[in-house]
Length: 117
Image (cartoon, rainbow, N blue to C red; front, top):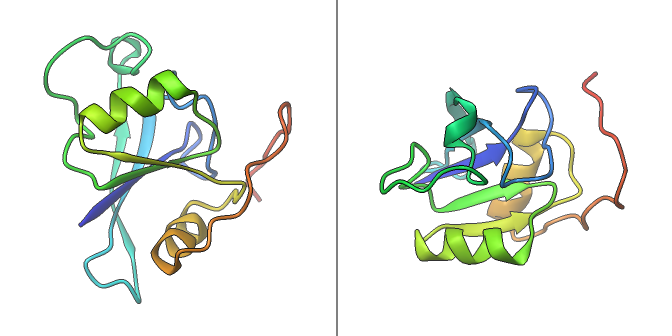
C-alpha cells in the first residue's frame, strides 16, 4: 500500500494540494516502518489544478496527505479512489506514521508558514 504526501520542498508537508507538483511517496506495507520509495517532481500541467487527463502519476495510492485541500479537490481525488487527509504535521514521515496510527494533527491555521530544519 502506498501513501503520497504533498511536499513542494521535499522536506515538509505543504498545502494547496491542487496546485502542488511535488509529492513524496511512501510504502506502508510494513506499518511499523514506512519508507519513502519515490519523489515525484511533475510539470505544471500535471498539478491537479491544471490536469484533465485520464492517468496521473499518483494514481494507485491509497491516501494523499496534505496541509490543505478544498472540497473540489477532495471530490476529484475520491473519484480516483484516493482518500485526502489534511494534517497540521509538518514532517512528512511523521504525518504518514500519524495516518497509520489513526491520529491526524489538526490543520495549521491559514497563512501559517512551515520551514524545514
